[in-house]
Image (spheres, rainbow, N blue to C red):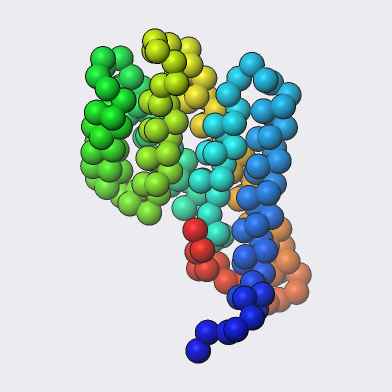
Length: 175
Protein backbone atom coordinates (compact mmCIF):
# COMPACT_ATOMS: atom_id res chain seq x y z
CA UNK A 1 0.00 0.00 0.00
CA UNK A 2 1.38 3.39 -0.99
CA UNK A 3 2.20 5.89 1.71
CA UNK A 4 0.00 8.98 1.98
CA UNK A 5 3.00 11.15 2.89
CA UNK A 6 5.10 11.76 -0.25
CA UNK A 7 8.09 12.82 1.87
CA UNK A 8 8.37 9.23 3.10
CA UNK A 9 9.22 8.22 -0.47
CA UNK A 10 12.42 10.24 -0.22
CA UNK A 11 15.42 8.22 0.84
CA UNK A 12 19.19 8.52 0.80
CA UNK A 13 19.33 7.39 -2.86
CA UNK A 14 17.02 10.21 -3.86
CA UNK A 15 19.08 12.68 -1.84
CA UNK A 16 22.34 11.48 -3.43
CA UNK A 17 20.84 11.65 -6.92
CA UNK A 18 19.66 15.19 -6.20
CA UNK A 19 23.11 16.19 -4.92
CA UNK A 20 24.82 14.63 -7.96
CA UNK A 21 22.54 16.52 -10.35
CA UNK A 22 22.95 19.81 -8.50
CA UNK A 23 26.73 19.40 -8.37
CA UNK A 24 26.94 18.70 -12.09
CA UNK A 25 24.62 21.57 -12.94
CA UNK A 26 26.64 23.99 -10.79
CA UNK A 27 29.92 23.02 -12.48
CA UNK A 28 28.43 23.39 -15.97
CA UNK A 29 26.66 26.61 -15.04
CA UNK A 30 30.00 28.01 -13.89
CA UNK A 31 31.44 27.18 -17.32
CA UNK A 32 28.38 28.75 -18.95
CA UNK A 33 28.91 32.00 -17.03
CA UNK A 34 32.73 31.98 -17.29
CA UNK A 35 32.76 31.41 -21.07
CA UNK A 36 29.73 33.22 -22.49
CA UNK A 37 30.97 32.89 -26.08
CA UNK A 38 30.44 29.11 -25.96
CA UNK A 39 27.11 27.27 -25.70
CA UNK A 40 27.77 25.65 -22.32
CA UNK A 41 24.01 25.59 -21.69
CA UNK A 42 24.19 22.37 -23.74
CA UNK A 43 26.66 21.01 -21.17
CA UNK A 44 24.04 21.68 -18.49
CA UNK A 45 21.50 19.66 -20.48
CA UNK A 46 24.05 16.92 -21.11
CA UNK A 47 25.06 16.59 -17.45
CA UNK A 48 21.42 16.46 -16.35
CA UNK A 49 20.66 13.67 -18.82
CA UNK A 50 23.87 11.72 -18.22
CA UNK A 51 23.80 11.52 -14.41
CA UNK A 52 21.74 8.59 -13.20
CA UNK A 53 20.05 7.81 -9.92
CA UNK A 54 21.81 4.52 -9.47
CA UNK A 55 25.42 4.33 -8.39
CA UNK A 56 26.61 2.36 -11.40
CA UNK A 57 29.86 3.40 -13.01
CA UNK A 58 28.94 1.16 -15.96
CA UNK A 59 25.77 3.14 -16.64
CA UNK A 60 27.76 6.38 -16.44
CA UNK A 61 30.24 5.04 -19.01
CA UNK A 62 27.40 3.73 -21.20
CA UNK A 63 25.69 7.11 -21.18
CA UNK A 64 28.93 8.83 -22.18
CA UNK A 65 29.44 6.38 -25.04
CA UNK A 66 25.80 6.92 -26.03
CA UNK A 67 26.32 10.70 -26.02
CA UNK A 68 29.37 10.28 -28.24
CA UNK A 69 27.32 8.03 -30.54
CA UNK A 70 24.58 10.67 -30.80
CA UNK A 71 27.17 13.36 -31.53
CA UNK A 72 28.88 11.20 -34.18
CA UNK A 73 25.61 10.43 -35.96
CA UNK A 74 24.66 14.11 -35.87
CA UNK A 75 27.99 15.17 -37.33
CA UNK A 76 27.61 12.61 -40.12
CA UNK A 77 24.13 13.93 -40.94
CA UNK A 78 24.97 17.60 -40.45
CA UNK A 79 26.20 18.27 -44.01
CA UNK A 80 23.07 16.77 -45.58
CA UNK A 81 20.81 19.46 -46.96
CA UNK A 82 17.43 18.22 -45.78
CA UNK A 83 14.80 19.50 -43.39
CA UNK A 84 15.63 19.34 -39.71
CA UNK A 85 12.71 16.95 -39.19
CA UNK A 86 14.12 14.48 -41.73
CA UNK A 87 17.57 14.74 -40.11
CA UNK A 88 16.02 14.14 -36.66
CA UNK A 89 14.13 11.07 -37.90
CA UNK A 90 17.08 9.62 -39.82
CA UNK A 91 19.35 10.35 -36.88
CA UNK A 92 16.96 8.69 -34.45
CA UNK A 93 16.77 5.55 -36.60
CA UNK A 94 20.54 5.34 -37.01
CA UNK A 95 21.26 6.14 -33.35
CA UNK A 96 18.75 3.63 -31.99
CA UNK A 97 19.98 0.92 -34.35
CA UNK A 98 23.66 1.54 -33.60
CA UNK A 99 23.01 1.93 -29.86
CA UNK A 100 21.10 -1.34 -29.75
CA UNK A 101 23.87 -3.14 -31.65
CA UNK A 102 26.42 -1.69 -29.20
CA UNK A 103 24.35 -2.83 -26.19
CA UNK A 104 23.51 0.70 -25.07
CA UNK A 105 19.72 0.32 -24.87
CA UNK A 106 19.65 1.65 -21.29
CA UNK A 107 21.47 4.80 -22.39
CA UNK A 108 19.68 5.60 -25.65
CA UNK A 109 17.92 8.69 -24.31
CA UNK A 110 21.35 10.26 -23.75
CA UNK A 111 22.29 9.46 -27.34
CA UNK A 112 19.03 10.95 -28.62
CA UNK A 113 19.54 14.14 -26.62
CA UNK A 114 23.07 14.57 -27.98
CA UNK A 115 21.84 13.95 -31.52
CA UNK A 116 19.18 16.65 -31.20
CA UNK A 117 21.52 19.13 -29.49
CA UNK A 118 23.99 18.94 -32.37
CA UNK A 119 21.50 18.82 -35.26
CA UNK A 120 19.07 21.50 -34.12
CA UNK A 121 19.54 24.56 -36.27
CA UNK A 122 18.32 27.89 -34.92
CA UNK A 123 19.96 29.83 -37.72
CA UNK A 124 19.03 29.92 -41.40
CA UNK A 125 22.46 28.75 -42.51
CA UNK A 126 24.30 25.75 -41.08
CA UNK A 127 27.66 26.45 -39.51
CA UNK A 128 30.14 23.67 -38.71
CA UNK A 129 31.67 25.72 -35.91
CA UNK A 130 28.32 25.78 -34.10
CA UNK A 131 27.92 22.01 -34.46
CA UNK A 132 31.46 21.34 -33.22
CA UNK A 133 31.01 23.72 -30.26
CA UNK A 134 27.86 21.82 -29.32
CA UNK A 135 29.66 18.49 -29.56
CA UNK A 136 32.38 19.89 -27.29
CA UNK A 137 29.81 21.11 -24.78
CA UNK A 138 27.98 17.76 -24.77
CA UNK A 139 31.30 16.04 -24.11
CA UNK A 140 32.11 18.51 -21.31
CA UNK A 141 28.72 17.73 -19.73
CA UNK A 142 29.49 13.99 -20.01
CA UNK A 143 32.91 14.39 -18.42
CA UNK A 144 31.43 16.44 -15.58
CA UNK A 145 28.71 13.80 -15.08
CA UNK A 146 31.32 11.03 -15.03
CA UNK A 147 33.53 12.86 -12.52
CA UNK A 148 30.56 13.65 -10.27
CA UNK A 149 29.44 10.01 -10.44
CA UNK A 150 32.91 8.69 -9.65
CA UNK A 151 33.39 11.09 -6.72
CA UNK A 152 29.98 10.29 -5.24
CA UNK A 153 30.62 6.56 -5.66
CA UNK A 154 34.00 6.86 -3.92
CA UNK A 155 32.41 8.76 -1.04
CA UNK A 156 29.60 6.18 -0.80
CA UNK A 157 32.09 3.30 -0.73
CA UNK A 158 34.19 5.06 1.92
CA UNK A 159 31.04 5.60 4.02
CA UNK A 160 30.07 1.93 3.68
CA UNK A 161 33.60 0.80 4.52
CA UNK A 162 33.78 3.05 7.56
CA UNK A 163 30.34 2.32 8.99
CA UNK A 164 30.02 -1.27 7.76
CA UNK A 165 26.60 -1.08 6.18
CA UNK A 166 24.79 0.61 3.36
CA UNK A 167 21.74 2.79 3.56
CA UNK A 168 22.02 3.32 -0.16
CA UNK A 169 20.05 1.22 -2.60
CA UNK A 170 22.30 1.14 -5.70
CA UNK A 171 19.46 -0.20 -7.85
CA UNK A 172 17.00 2.58 -7.10
CA UNK A 173 16.85 4.16 -10.59
CA UNK A 174 14.35 6.99 -10.53
CA UNK A 175 15.47 8.43 -13.87
